[in-house]
Image (cartoon, rainbow, N blue to C red; front, top):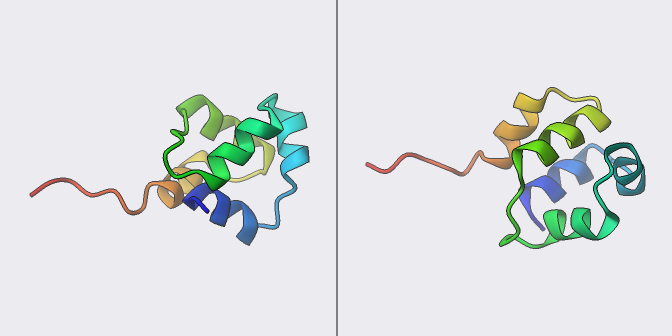
Amino acid sequence: MTELGLFLSRKSVNRSDVSRKTGISKTRLSELTNNASTKLRADELYLIALAIDVDPCELLKEVCRELQLKN
């Protein structure tokens, strides 16, 4: 499961509701939450955050928390 998938699970988010509210297909949401090689676009992140009523920055920090600058 991806960081997005873990975040949505912790928040007990209904993915069908997210799909309906955002226009992001259920198939695409499934890929974003289960496949680590699938890239989340900024517009998708923003729409998902709006749909689940969280600050987009909070979602971004959770999804990207493992990223670090190179030394």
